[in-house]
Length: 295
Image (cartoon, rainbow, N blue to C red; front, side, top):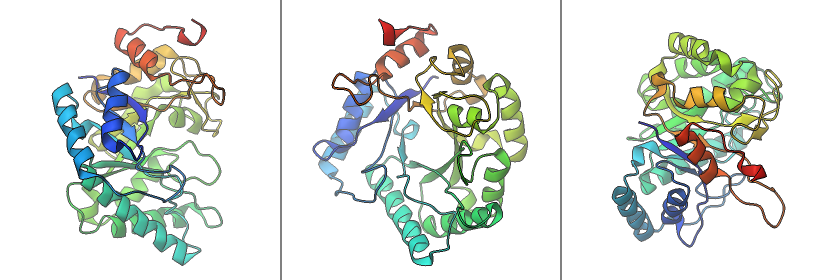
């Protein structure tokens, strides 16, 4: 079954209920959101009444909560422990964010692994594994999804080998809670041509296991293969293109895995800007490109 959705807004007045309502307006049966700022740690209390209403609406409309995800803020960096206090703060905040997911009963959290900055890749990988072992300890019924990254700067998680190394260093009880979120833009920018996506999956299955893939961000890219830029483009309007992205969405090996759009708003930073998700979801379902930007 196709589970398709997009990034949505989690705002104080409606919280998860607003996320569900926005998702339904796009024709989604999945969604992703941040539980506060995507670049900071400020958070407001979860309202249990709004959460209950949200889950009732999801049940009514056939949205499976297990096909929905939360995204952790970008500020968390588990790869660098040169400042021990800051490193421990990130671990503690990640633990709190995981508990927040449990409170919202959306039990998959996507995390950018981090950047090693002044250290080296091997040390960064060890730091990430150590941080996950601490953050996930004593938490049950929660999944953490490490995102495959584009290779910008000193990012970790920019290859299958990076992610395999992190997972292999985890405590055995923690490994069961850690999965992967792929991103088509990141895969492209890291050096894989999406036309070879099945070869990518073959290598992933050999080194990690395809059952570890729990979410896919389906973004086009503004840049070429191996650019290491991480600049998303609208679905079918970038260098990857509509057909190659559609082949990822409908790949039989990834059936039932939620596909999430993180594509740019149209007319970004202008007064008449608007989200593209309703149009993109429609053409994905129809398997037909619609030049909605130039309509």
